[in-house]
Image (cartoon, rainbow, N blue to C red; front, top):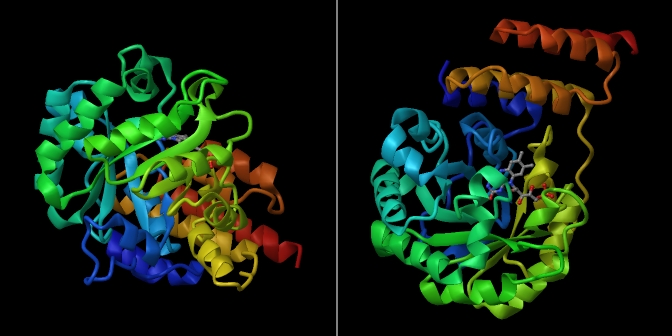
Length: 354
Ligand SMILES: Cc1cc2nc3c(=O)[nH]c(=O)nc-3n(C[C@H](O)[C@H](O)[C@H](O)COP(=O)(O)O)c2cc1C
């Protein structure tokens, strides 16, 4: 089955769209402000997570846009097809945001140009990662290390714009700062805007907090006040309520959902419902099992490594009857049928409790 066939058949059984909604034709893709007005709830970039299947689930759950995992510019230059797989949308993704990381302007120019050429109209935007705190990345001056080098970072923005021309937005994603207590995001964002960035995503934690501690949404507001381009807020968006609240409290034009989307592809549509003043009903265990089935089938249909389904099982089946036994089953799963058997067992366990 193709990803489109999987989603058409299995998505609606899980309360998801059978086909993702594209950006309305009247909206120019360079105009992010208008795009975010149509739908401000975005699926965040997550290395090792936001592959084509994950993004498809997010779009089917109502995300306005979904990001690729961070992709190395050097990897695209030297590595070839394996790295390109991270960039390639599934056939039924209307468009995707591609996030690049690196530190060399020439490689950014080249990567942005070739991504734009390969994806054509399906490239919504190029985002530059200036947020990753992992030492393997920062020790090469990449990711959040760029927060210490605004001139170089501005050069990377200009290089990407050079690479894609004027029809694809180039954005950046930053942290609050590199070191605890040293907030640089508002000033840094201004420099990126001057260099031509079309939007600024800000994760309200310092890089050396990694993913711990509370994200400061006040920092999202300060960045939103510092620049005229749209700001995308990130950090501790753990539910649809939090997503709607960040949007109304911070002045952000859009919100990224990251860990809050684990096992919850409906979070985007639910957030939109809350924003519109209605309260979405909680998902039933059977819907969650149906979503797990759909997601695993999408992994298979997109040619992904099925090992990724192990964490998915943990997320979708959390708190269900016989969860420990189901986790035990998952450890030995190899094939699509093995994972679908776990879904069947979860359903039987529900039947048993009535
Ligand atoms: C497993 C994982 C991988 C991530 N990978 C990326 C990445 O590749 N690029 C990026 O900009 N942020 C990445 N992030 C950060 C998220 O996009 C987001 O900014 C962060 O998790 C804060 O949001 P949350 O507290 O709501 O999860 C990652 C986060 C997680 C948990």
